[in-house]
Amino acid sequence: MPRSPAQQAALLASPDDTEAQFYEALQHADLDRLMALWADEDEVACVHPGGPRIVGLPAIRAAFEAVFQHGAVHLHPERVRRLHSGDCAIHHVLERVQLHDGGKTSWVIATNVYLKTALGWRLVLHHASPGSAGDVQELVADAGTLH
Image 1: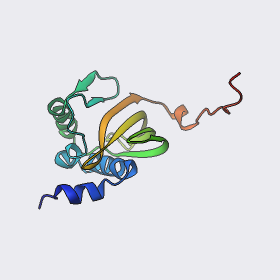
Image 2: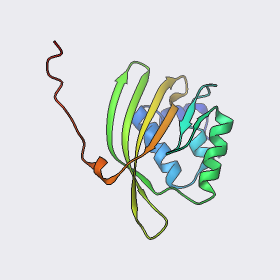
Image 3: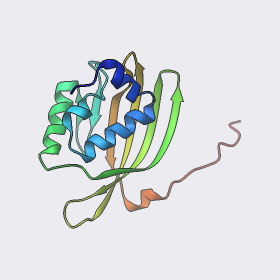
């Protein structure tokens, strides 16, 4: 049974809720669930590792439909850095991907941008780039004094 907008908004009460739903949809190859997380905006965009910029809901849907033809994506967020300001949230994520060919691990660095809407927090950008095992170690510098 489809959820009402109020039920979906309750499930997407924070950017973290939306992100959890996003990764669960990928892990279950659930295209409808995944697409329900995107904002209804013309300029939503997605970049798959090594791929072009995909703009608009129909193009994003087609891209994920092609991905899901190979089955679920065994992808798990490992490290998340969060920046929230008002009605916008940016999450920088290190993703661990279990490949289908014998359980090898691959790494992806992703940026997910969320916008607070009347229907809850929605995804407006997912930008993923190839990573490496070295990305598990984060380089973090103290902010220090600017001047």
